[in-house]
Amino acid sequence: MRYKLAIFDMDGTILDTLEDIRDATNHVLKEAGFPERSTEEVRAVVGNGALQLITESAPAGTPAPVCKELLATFQTYYRAHSNDKTRAYEGVPELLRDLKDAGVTLAVVSNKPDAAVPPLCDLYFKGLFDLAIGERDDIKRKPAPDMVEYALRTLGFEKKDAVYIGDSEVDVQTAGNAGLDLIAVNWGFRTVEELKKAGAETIVSAPGEVFRLIHS
Image (cartoon, rainbow, N blue to C red; front, side):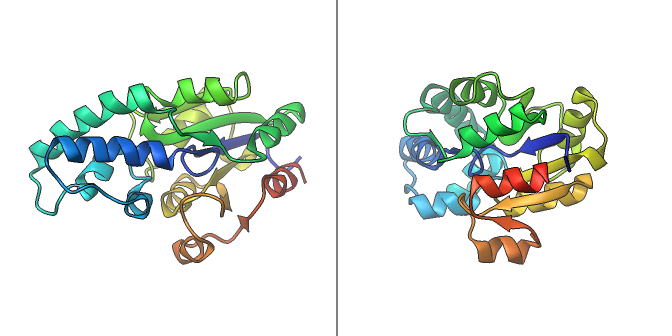
């Protein structure tokens, strides 16, 4: 087996969360009297954490204190509506079960608010992940390597034994910063062209390809 630990991003990699993120963003913007954003506009800024999502979705020049107030509203709303339209990508539950059955340890490292990450993992992938963490105040968010390094320490693996799987330029940068091999998936929030531009070398189009790369 090539890798003993597989660390997955969440949004756009194992779960299609885009519509719920869009709806929560637009709820906040509408309440503030700001223009709402299209699905594609939200897709373009997902991945760098909730504060940046809100900051880039609000009108240009919106003061930072206002953005932080909007963030608090977003987090409250999203906690209650994180699973209205979210779904697992086709083939991903089977991929995770196959990896687990093959003896691979599984983790999720996400820039989604930490309050949402373990519950969504438990709902869609119960018993499959050995660790699931989201954005927390005490750990620098991706693309800093801190969250990945926390997962490695907590689960007891060296970098050479782990691979990172994600769907965005943030994930490409995270894997590079953490010194891990990367498998980029093209069914998420970024195109093949965007992933290549970000520096991804291994790009797959089906969950079965992920299994083969990890298990080879």
